[in-house]
Image (cartoon, rainbow, N blue to C red; front, side, top):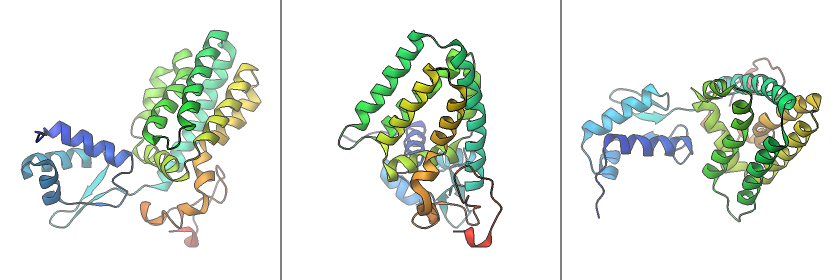
Length: 243
């Protein structure tokens, strides 16, 4: 049976496909192909493309081509830096008020991630969703839920970078193991360990993807990226570092 797509249906599907990297950074979007794919006229397609452009997910060049935006590594690295600073502070606050019941909730949420990771071919989108639920726990428990919503806003670059880590590196087990260590530190109220483990965890995508960022996935990024020599380290722009 033919599905009748609304503009919202089309937007939601394209949004999910871009965020999950099913439509890769730099990929071309053609109006005619989209009209045929969804069985609609140009009018709703153009409306959807305008919305995606406003969301920062596509670049429209009039009379030429429309592309999925490439990832901006400078933006990503600053977003990781910001998240490490904020989340470390929030988890330290959480350590001081953490209860056995709260720890039980966190362990259960990480166990759900472990079960998914142990599947033969884990779904990256499902894993990403459950991972967010776990991290949101300490923001909500400390009354910082607005902060959590804030760091989720305008995170298209960072969110797609995290999805790249899940889709390509597929080290689901490593991520869950990092959670285990972080939860142990929280339970022991070891704030120094929390700071180190939180930084390692949030910079993990850089470690796992490593040199492939500037080789295999170079076309996914805006040219001229300032690649760090080590995850989390300050770095100066270098001509040879550009993809």
